[in-house]
Amino acid sequence: MWRGPALWFCAALLVRALTAAAVTHPGYIDAYYSFHVAANLLEGRGLVEDVLWNYLSPPLSLPRPSNAYWPPGGALFAAAGGLALPETWPLWRRMQGAPVLGAALVVARAYVVARHAPAEAEERPSGTRLAGTRRPASPPPEDRLSAVRRANAVAGLTLFSGIYFPYWVTTDVFTPYALVGGGALWLAVTAAQPRGPGSRPYVTTPEARNSVASVEPQRHYAGPAGGHAWLLLASGLLAGLAQGIRADGLLLLVAPLTAAVAAGRQRRGALLPGVALTLAGGLAGSFPLLLRTWLTYGTLAPPGVGGALWLREYDDLFLYAETLTMERWRAAGIDAALSLRVGSLPAGLAVLGHPLLYYAVPLTLLGLWRTRRAIATWIPLAYVMALYALMTLVFPLQGVRGGLFHSLIAALPWLYGWTVQGLETVVARGARRRGWPERQAQAVFCAALVAFGALASVYFAGQLTGRWNRRLAAYGAAATWLDARTQGDGRVMAVDPPGFWYVSRRSTVMTPSDGPAALTAAAVALDVDYVLVEPAAPAYLAPVYRGEQAAPDLHIVAVIGPIQIYRVAPAVPGLARQGTTGAVSSPGRAARSSAAVFPSPG
Image (tube, rainbow, N blue to C red; front, side, top):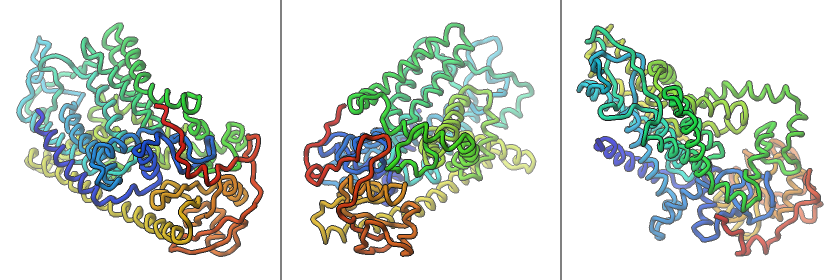
């Protein structure tokens, strides 16, 4: 029973370790930020940050409590690896330990998910259910071979996973969310499966179906029975824990709630207990995050999340002189809000196609149709549909810029399961028309699907790591120049504050997106000494970068590769933020370098 998952775990562990060796640093802002907070945790400083990558939440001084926007789960997961591995290892390699191990477990679980998934809900051969009995017969050997083949293909696709491939071994939240969020989906699906000896759902092959003259409808029992009700509680608990990893983690409650509703339709009186168990689990799982947020900020939701509702464009995340409010959002007009959401609908569909490399989307839809009557299909599908709606209609800007891509990773085993089943349907029809030996054809096409996924994964890994390395090299050269001319305590402003901190260990803040006056005000209030102007800087700095106009209150001191380094002019008046009682105070150099930091409240 455990041979297949164990073999895939070992294979995945090897592949992930090799990938981790090729990924030599976090790579991009999300992963850099988790690394930064995890490093502070390992130093005993608690959940604090020395970088400021947005201006959504107070206090606008450093150091300050971390994770006012992104939850701390990614940093905690990375820190766990750093704590478990020898201190003689480089810190980055230690923090890759948990992602490498967790990603290997995700592949093994994908095998189990696919191995026990129903292949076709519409029909089963009459020989698979003994007439007049409640106990299904054992699956024929050909069915077991087909299920193993399908499980191997799904595990292989999950191992490589296309564009996701290099992200598994970073300090971003991809691996912990896949581990915890996928676990919530799996437990919800398991809770809805038939129970009892011999009742494990199994699959049938086209050959077996064609050999039987008559078929009978397969009624999938849906709902937790007896001792299996705890699965809904456990699924809700994992959904609550996922809230500490992704700000939309509680959306996973859709899965156990769908299972509970299905139980209510099958058995009278099962709905309310199932819903109560699910919600109780969600509350228990999210309680540590709620407690930390309350003790740190005095609210149940992190302060950075509320402002994210009122974005009119993505760069509003980096406003300094303005605060994000409903009034400001409404001032743009309802037409702008509707236009943004209508435009995000096709963009969100494009994101859904990322893990399928687009060419496999028809196969996925065909497999989804093939299993459309199974509750085991509807549970993960309900999550994907709810996620798509949330990330296109409620958070359209964050959704298409990474939110949907991040959270979709929890459903990968089911997406790939539908893809493989769609491929099997196409191959079965081709075999009947062309006279292929179907068993061999199915094996060949499944292997080809996985092989193509592996090639695409290697390609994406090369493209992404190359881009990450170029950014790191540019920041490293700028940090070297600054270190040679300063004492290492000058604060810097850049478009990737955690990334520049990684190469320099300098306190760094975000370049505001709302114009030169806001940049000057933020630089003065936050005691910034140097501003890095680079190709990814806000649009108002483009003429400065091209040399077409001078930068107000800034003096250029160096050009290092693609980065221009400016020194902030002294004694420039500050600019008060809208909605505040005065200008933002500066912590000063002494506060920056002080060892007195905010303790972790949890």
